[in-house]
Structures are given as C-alpha cells and as structure tokens.
Length: 191
Length: 213
Image 1: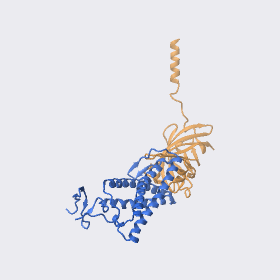
Image 2: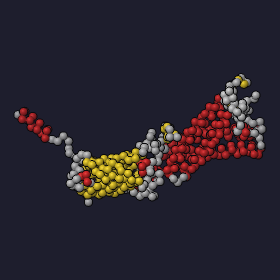
Image 3: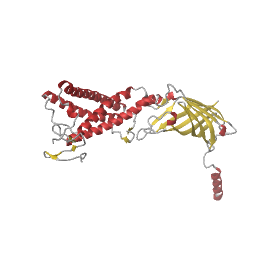
Image 4: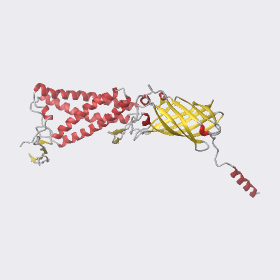
C-alpha cells in the first residue's frame, strides 16, 4: 500500500509543471489601444550624489498590433504628451516642461514607432523603434514582457534606457545622468 | 636674484619683500603703514567675485531661458564656495599679518565708521556664502552641487523641507541686500576720499606698502 502511494505521489510530482506558465505573446494576438487604467509611464534620471528625478507621463496614447501568425511582425506606436509630466514637485515639473528639457510650448508630443520586434521568449521581446523628441529621431530598444492577458486586455512591462543628450535635453549633465531609465507598464484593450 | 623672495628681519619680525623689476621692495605682508601684496590681491579678487556674484544671482533668477538659468545657478554655487574659501584665506592672512594703522588723515568718526563697516563686511562675507550653502542643502529639490564641474559639494546636515528652504532663502536674500548696501557704502567712502578729499586712503589698497631701503 505504501509503495503504491509513493509511486502515485512521484507521478503526481513529475506531472506538475515546474512553474506556472505565463501568458504567451502568441496568445495575445490582436489590435489594442493603450488605456490609462493600468498603465504607468515612469522614468528616472539618476543624480550624482543627490536625489534622482523620478516622474511619470500622465497623458499618452498608442496602438499595439500583434499578428496571430508572427509576433515579430507586431507594430507599436506610442505618443506621449510631455506637458503631462508629473514628478510630485511643481518646480521640477515646470523645469521639465520648459525650454531646458521638453520645451512643451513648441514640442507637443514625443513619439515612438516600432521598426523591428525580436521575440526573446514565450512572453518576452525586444522592440526596436524610432523615438522622436524635440525634432530629433534616433533608434531605441526596449525590453518588453507580457505580464497579463485576459478577456481582451493585455498589460506589458517595458524597460529601456535613453540618452537624453541626443534629443537636445542634456541640461544638467553630468550632475544628472545622461541616461534616462524608463520603467513602464502599458495596459491596452482590444479594439 | 632680483625676483627672489627675501626675508630680512626688520624691527624684530619676519618681513617678506618682492623685488621684480619696477616693484622694488614691495611688501608681501602688511606693515603698520600699509597693505601688502597678498592682502591687496585678496581684496580685489573678492571685490570682483562678490560684485559679480550679486549680479549673477539677480540674473539667474530673472533670465527666461531655464536651461541658461540652471547653468548660471551652478556657476553661482561654485563661485559662492570660491568666495568662502578666499575669504577664509583672507581672515587667516589678517590674523597672521599686521593690521595697518588707519590713515592719519581720517577723523575720529571716519575711523569709527570705517571700523564698523569693515567688521560688518567681514561678517557678511562669511555668513552670506554659508547661507547659500544652507539654502541648497535644505531645498526639497535636492539638487547636488558640482563645484566648477570638478567635485561634489556635500549638503549641510539641515532639515530638508519647504519651511526650511524658505527660511534660508529669505536669510540669503536679506544678507545679500545688507551686503550690497555695505559694499555701496564702502565704495562711496573710497571714492569720497579719492575724489572729494583727495587723500591717499584708496591708494593704500591700490599700491602695496614698500619696505624702507
């Protein structure tokens, strides 16, 4: 009897997956529109010996198209409105909106258009695209992970590093790092 | 040999003289009758820096270009530290060196006024940069200071809050106003001696004392 229980337990143990499978990018095929609910476009600019500048963009829009047959044919277009930048300190917000950084009086939007998507795992990919800010366009690469997919809704976690000096925003370097760390959650709804 | 610093003993104390061509027997240190080269150089360096610093402070707050404003504020902080260091050197030099007697032509009230204004200027030059440093340290923005792009200046251990920042901003502004008034009084007094009274009071800070042959 004991031997049977042991065999059954061993079979059950090996039958269980080692970890719960996450949502797959292939499963998430479809056309999506970004939604503010569940999205968080956060960035950090580290400082040398001081407090880093951390903030979020509150106003943005975008579309994500994932074909069912080939995830690497996916297309992403995101528009960020820098006038919505929020750091929790009004003076920093005003400075970021000024001509020193985003120059929101003359530059209304920052856009990202994907050029190439390379799948790196079942739920991960790198998205290379052209980022345009203040009239400058450069190729940037972001790491993307699908963290949620259910009932026509998806949520991606996106990380990337951008050199701000290339976009005419090098004010304060090297006191503040030239590298802007992006740590974002992009939630989208099918449709 | 003419350019060497010589240290002959005069009246029982060590006196430094500088002897390049055209500056024979110029005193490095102060004498009882006048200021030496070091005191004069420090005086004019601080004069230029402090007046420039006040102008820079006003400009950085008024300029519309926020990028330029940020850079000017960094320069303002660096120059403020330089002023503090130079002023500390000047204080040390004053302690180590002889303090010249007041000009013989000065009336009693002029000597008294001059003494008061000088002491107040010394106090302001010491406290003004420190109050700026305190303002930066107490600011909720927490912006670091990279002195002339060379090294980071640590913040003073002060409470970081809006109230603390506002207090030190007000203190800095009040001291700037007091300093500006004192500097104006100092300049006007020097010009009065030169242009109205025609005496040699200003000359003492233009030409270093010379050792007697």
